[in-house]
Length: 322
Image (cartoon, rainbow, N blue to C red; front, side, top):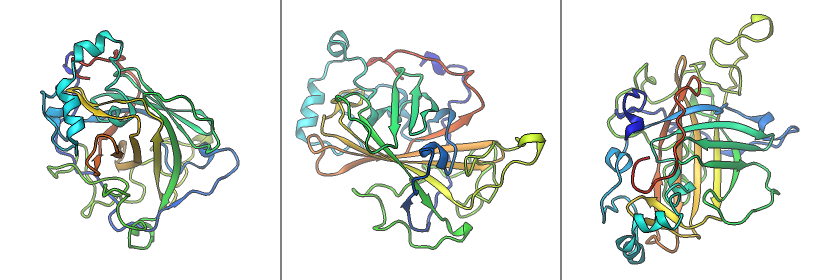
């Protein structure tokens, strides 16, 4: 909790997020020379801070024993949680078992996203000092099981109605498992985020401060001080499928996931106003070992920061948040 004191940017207010209700069909972006970096429909690189507007108590403090709300655990998972001992696991060198990919994005932390190479996005966290590598190369070699697993990424293109796209949503409706559609639902509480909200209906007006098409940030001119490049008439969603995980914890009170758990994620840039951007990450976790045949779906929200001046690396801990 110390690192949160005095940091006004850890927001815990209701947030209305622009979603793409009624968006057109979803399809993978066509491969182009130069790799995934050369075909980005949106620019999500930079620094981001978590907006704690959902399940504040479960994310900002370590939950008590038996607090399983929202996770479809079976009897085996509850028995594991009842027997879990944070002190014992820490002494055994497992302090990072709650910082695996299925739980990491829900923590109150900051992200630093960069391109490691033309086909790999690097996602670093200050809390726990973790690194996720999102690989666009389907032929990339799989490694040994790890906390962050093997993540396969694909750019999806969406044509919202505001840009002339058809209605009907993605084929089959919501993602498999009953999760929210790519981009997720708005967090409870309504209300536009500080600094300006989306217009009625949740849409994002063309040219509203987002880095659509991977162009320069708002106000940044091109060579010779010219106007920034025009935004492409499309939104981009990043789909990430992760498996090959080490077993770990969804919550620091001992809620487990197994080495057979998988994650389906949809990363969406939400340009709200000039200089104000959000990133939603809809995460759908499946686990045939510890879940009752259902999925655990969450949509953490992040806000873009101008630079890394608030970056504060800290080690993994099972006793405190983050």
